[in-house]
Image (cartoon, rainbow, N blue to C red; front, side):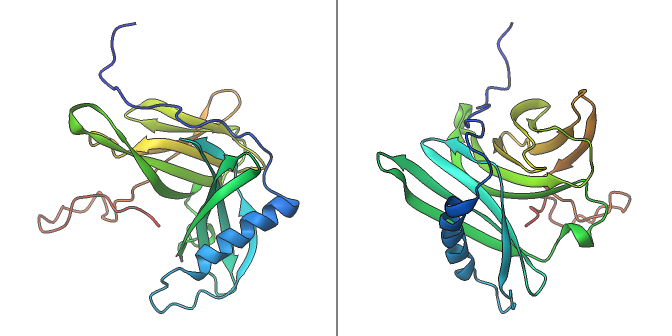
Length: 221
């Protein structure tokens, strides 16, 4: 094959190695996740108390494993984030956790086909000084029939994950050379069922553009 003009890191993370967290391991991860939740700057909002934590498939990159999580609160918000750790000789060590919140939930957005959360965990340096944002993406399909979820950058698949209990985790380069990730849900037969961008254009595309408006995409959540 000839050289590619899309020289970018692909399939950088190990595929999921474990089943979804449960039991004592889920309890350990939960302690770290809830600590990060308590440290959220809610800007005066009453986030309430976190409910049951939903864990997502693990992905390992650059020597660290990332386990995303989502939890609803008693006041209707959604907490989302991840717990990361390294594998030491005595087991998982050097834990790190991050969390944030959103009021945008799947129930209030019936048009969603994929319910996505994301966080940038690092960077990858490419050609000519260009840098990609290594982005952890996790979520659930809001339609049935899916088997695999892919992350595409400028039409090239840069990561994929088979659904585990209708949940997935991706780790892929984003915002590289003005290209942005698109997340797609696929059926077992190879049919595309849904496609969602990580970026939301809040302006109606049918409306005339206002030259005073910022044209950069807004990142959801």
